[in-house]
Image (cartoon, rainbow, N blue to C red; front, side, top):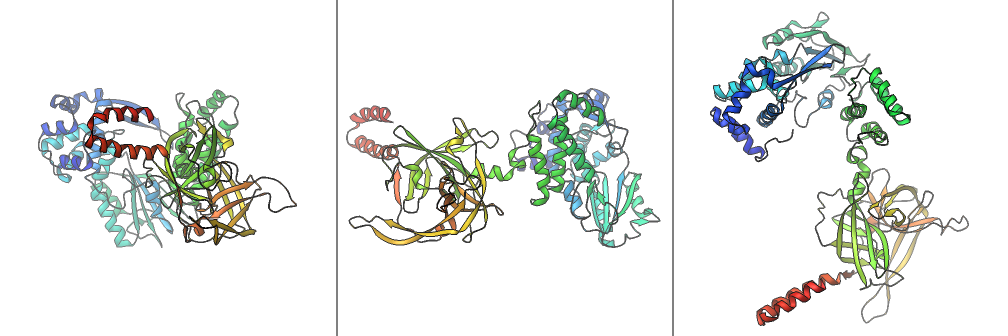
Length: 618
């Protein structure tokens, strides 16, 4: 729930709410005048403060929604937020609670042999104003006049407004005592009890105890608890389910794991197919509205988006069960909806989102030439390869480098999100590895950086080659390249590398191993160099892409393959001292700062001259 108080944090809101002592303080807390507060409290003006409309029920009939006007709605949102941070619902409550969902409640019944479900009849209209008053007066211990005002603000015609922002959380508090009684019953009968709004469920690993289900109906004991609380059970929705049938709790199938009925999937797939293949959107929309009984102002995209979101909410276990919903999201995003509705890439394609947050395009300018490459975040370092910063085969990076930019792209549309100036590069030319340092802090905690590998990877493994090839960099946007390849174990070889020592000859000090991958699907392209090689199963970075060889020649194994350096080996080896390149402007600015300080101390008359020279140079 978003904080509707613009100038107060959660702790301040909680303390202020609990210490309201009179109506004036209540008005101040809600951000209105006393006069305005009494205006909204006036029961004879109820009709002015609410808009009524009907919506169809799932199983036929209609439900009347009592929606408050803009001013009263904001007040109710503030009340709801204040109540939510001062009330901690029992573990059985799964609705209208931060961090809990319809899946939360259903999951608690997973593996049950029997499930009993029942609803409360006419729920919100059965929550009278005097009980709402009791929530504020007895539960939150607020003064009578304050509790009375709050109850009036949240009720329409003497009952909780069905459609008011404060009604759901207040109904949870109102049912708190009933929840405690049912939890006590569940403990006594060794069953599980949950409640989603007015939908209640008991489940058992064995036969259902008679205190819950008796004579093929809900027990008289449960009925008496419900009636004592001022409610009635809706008999037509009372049922007991076993493993031989589809067991559902709040509409969620729980036979094996939380799921939605198969008919629901099929309906969504049919909707997506119709809009994806249509050549006449308006005609397809017309058929959609007629077939599914929707009003003319209904937006099909919003309906389908909501249905897919529901599937994701139910199946989202952080693993394979959420894949089906994500595939639907991706299919939904391929359709050209008139309102440009889309799922965020972070939800629909979390793998791609992580790549865009942890992988950067690199642009280097030397004279009139541009060089492109890739870099990635891992182990709190920005890693790339060294050859993308130089032309020719020079060992050291040139002082002629005009700039090196690290470019972060927007995951939604591939546009450039931000450019970082690289001010220092540590590099090992014999290994073709480099660490990049920027002039501004890249928040590594916020970035979805890769975790480090914990073993050497062998041949035959499937890997992803990831990066920003120069051919896909088009001015203000750049498309990320991602291709599946195979490690070729037979082509793993050892090559010598050399290190330069001042005043000495070149000396062979060790050997390094390179790993090769096939180029069946494209391999490493120009611009991919420095990018991550990812293990396809765990999505962990296992290597640094070095160079590709796209010459298709079946007679030579040295061709038709790409080369990468195993990251585990690099991180765990004894490394020689790195070469360092620093941006000349950065060094000059540092030296200029000290020169300016020296001149200021000894001869302040020349400071203006130095200042003008600094502005001209930089």
